[in-house]
Image (cartoon, rainbow, N blue to C red; front, top):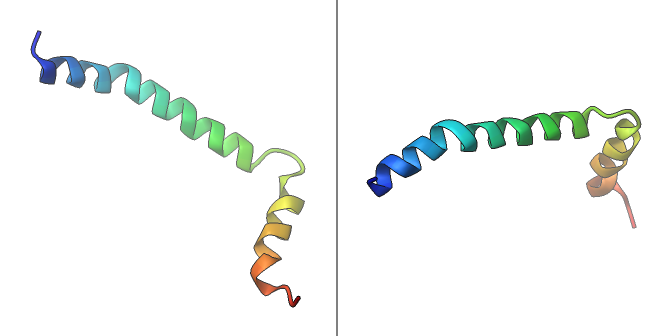
Length: 50
């Protein structure tokens, strides 16, 4: 099997599935309960006066 063909088959199947799982994990992490407070605190870091 040619290298390009093997990489193409991997990208069409498993890589796409892994990227989808990673994306869904990031979305769940961002919208999990209790993350709003943490996100608001992180957003205020540049505005804090020391």
